[in-house]
Image (cartoon, rainbow, N blue to C red; front, side):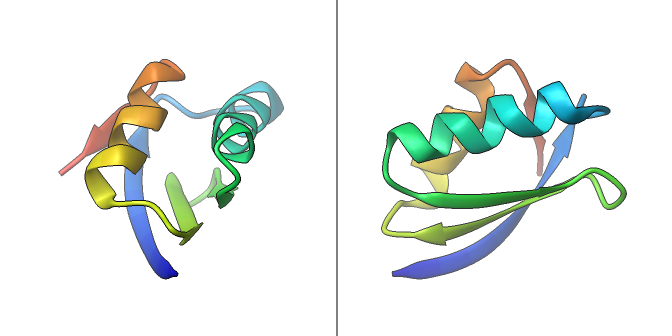
Length: 64
């Protein structure tokens, strides 16, 4: 298991939280969105590249 934080653009409301957290839940990975910090904390067995792809597939942009 790994835990890391990604900075994400375009998140502003509860829909954004549900979209991103739901996308990770489908992959059996825990994710927690922080709208104030504009971050997603991922806690699970997933690589950084895969996490970025999940976020982008949900319609959001990961900031490097």
